Length: 256
Image (cartoon, rainbow, N blue to C red):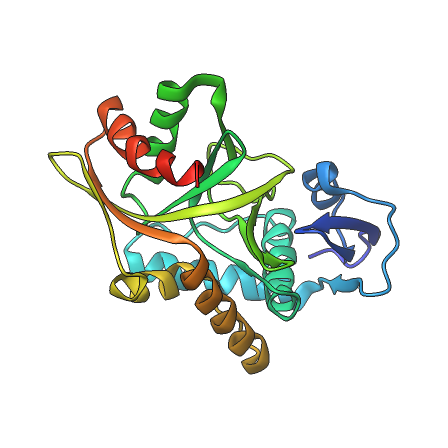
């Protein structure tokens, strides 16, 4: 990475927290443009990304590709810097009551439903079906890596610009009503489950900080989410009927 790149200094507001960003590429600031803020906060955090952080992201990418049998892609430093910024935010946020979670979040009439599953199951396809079925009532909060936070005792889910290959997200937050374990199936069927029955999946899909204290906070946040949010298992095909079947049950939670 060229050491002569001019340092970028700016502030963003994510999950109602202020982060001061110190990075090297203007693309990162542009990527975060909808979240830029001039607000001041006594509890703001500084996220500084250097060459060693970018090398770390490249190595993680290489190891992940090799483990999954995929082609190793040598991403640009500018792209890797965006990942490094989010990883550092995800390390900080648990101490403020929030976690990064892997899932696709659709909101209907102002209440959020998060669909989570292993990669390739069809989370984005299913939330697209919700938008087709419900029209303008359904909006995407984030299609890949939302933030879930406990704010004044309420579980809320927040959009971020780290929103997957379809780039579906918005700078907004909604109460989180349900988390759904999505599985492929020939017939569409949804049932309420004890969150402990899918706990391994919940842990897998949650970002797990390397800092022990932050990890402890993350697990406590997950425990609170499990007590306050409704959990379901949905077996579905990729037909719009799947959205209808799911919403008939999940939509009833919105009215409570």
